[in-house]
Image 1: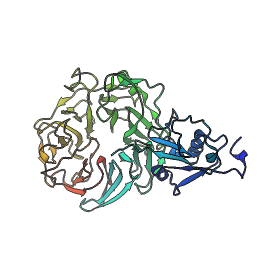
Image 2: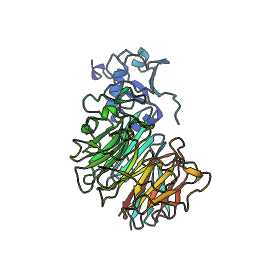
Image 3: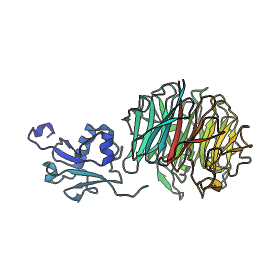
Image 4: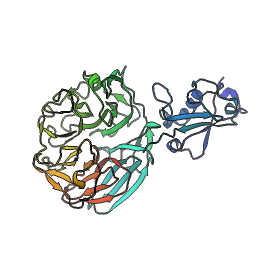
Length: 111
Length: 371
């Protein structure tokens, strides 16, 4: 099934981006909404996100390996999904658009 | 009337400083890309309004920004720097093999003849080239694969290719430098490379005169004499008169020959500027005095330039890409400090004034002379 197959009644996936990536993507709202084919996974959401905002490619997951960048974290329904498989099905609340997928920069100190 | 645009990369964003040819009154624009490290910005000599900026962070990696209007507006272009083939390993700090991993762009060097062509020196050390204004990047793999790559080792700041010099008299000749591998040259447009480190002596490596392994901090050339190169090595200020085939020391009477920056006067190819730093253990200027040293004899004999610079209680550093010259008459000289000051001299170093005092720590400075 594709995003288009889901029809007009399919809820949009909500994604919350960290401040610097919202700035880079010129997003002025707290959350972006995306159409994502089921099953809704982190990989599919990131694919859709990077298709909509090509400048985000390489900033959440690495070019080439596709691995999550070390200091970027992913949360869904108050659970840390950073170490889950990118292909694991996300909670139904995220797939239904009731909860956002949160992409955060780790609290990693810095200067 | 001519004007000057100074491009400042800092640890927390980019700034653009503008003045007319008098270089007395300046405007400060920015921060651009606020909160991100801007390792380098540079403009095309063909189209001065075409600027490239290296934007990066530990969280989100590398972004490449391009401006086509002199820095008023910017757009991200491609940030994919993929090593050609299987990149293999270099040495880690402890001497063990470590896989080549892209981290960031340290330096952009736009082509002397085409605004869409630009070179990128990156960490882990490699040279990339774009011929479409940053839309795609291809590695000039002959450098990394020329043979000594598995023996390269990072310096304290990482294994970075930080210097790219294009020979204005020979389109096939490029000089680059890597910390801590040394200097290299191609004579065929980047297909093949050779180390050019003969004459360098580095007591801190197992073989002080090794073919590679020297921590070259920066190299400078005057466009009228492309065979003459000046180098600030970790320790030692060096000179080559044969395009790097051999080097000799010209540290002369400098108070310390450790440092990062080195640059050449725009109109006097024997006039060279350095900023001595106390030591590799104490990365600040000696004696609490910020002094630029100038040689008018191509090295060995140096004079301290201190008029207008703080001469007490000053403990800043000046990093490798943080000095530049303009091409007005008299030659303007600019440098930025780890303390966020950008100093300018409109008289070839005789006197200095701060353009701005309180930026984030300065990583790089480039000066554009505009018609």
